[in-house]
Length: 314
Ligand code: TXA
Ligand code: MG
Image 1 (cartoon, rainbow, N blue to C red):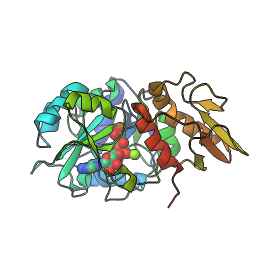
Image 2: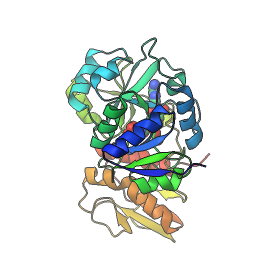
Image 3: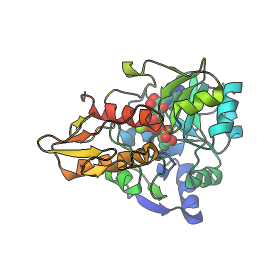
Image 4: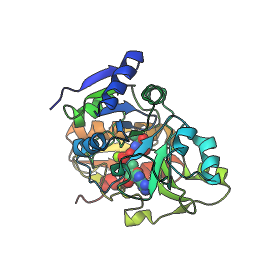
């Protein structure tokens, strides 16, 4: 057990966080999507601590966070398609999977020995400042115990990882609220995980369709296990009303215990998703019934997370 410090999103907080990273420790920090659990991506022991703190299977690779396109290019083989989407969406909620450069100096634990690397330039001002001050690549999965709901505020991080990490930098509530979109660009463009950038927007910028990699097989990205984001109670999707003892998570003009967006706005719904699931989980209801969500734009990312939350545990 360590005492987990809460650091401010200010110069003193950034300096303290960077010092912990340099010493091989773990610091959770805000991004525009969810809080990440960061470590120096070049330090084997530090990266190993991420897997330990989260009880994450070692075969599940991590996203590396960097401050700029130039920094990303040091670790991956760049391409025209990468340039196109990076120009359009970085900094922002998009992760690119590209061929790993030889001699990249990253810990092999980061990529779980795959020949590709997932990399992104986050847009949150606190994440950007931290990366600048640290001056190196930060490996960071979402800052939750493996298989549980992702954290969108410091309280969620502490609820799952207090005493297991050195610090969390307080940047308030994450504005996007679902994880980054993961786009595979090692071959033809393929959507490995729907997320904060709608696939429609990627297709518009690339000028071509983006394939899907059989997400229903459950392992499009290695860590895309079918059961994930699991709250403590059963989740029932496409519900019109709650049944015996369920709490209702609404969308649109419906009666509900909590509503993702009474106005039916998908951006607002994404921002509220994990916050409301955490809150309903704490309520002690027998289950959570969720309104239908349209399968378009950010709705794809919301439905992906909800299907995994509803999947049989195993
Ligand atoms: O928004 C996000 O992406 C957040 C913030 C903290 O950046 N991070 C995040 O990390 O969601 P994590 O570890 O919870 O999810 C990363 C996903 C996993 O499903 C992992 O299997 C996949 O990315 N991934 C990582 N490297 C990969 C690779 N080389 N090829 C395919 N998938 C990869
Ligand atoms: Mg995660």
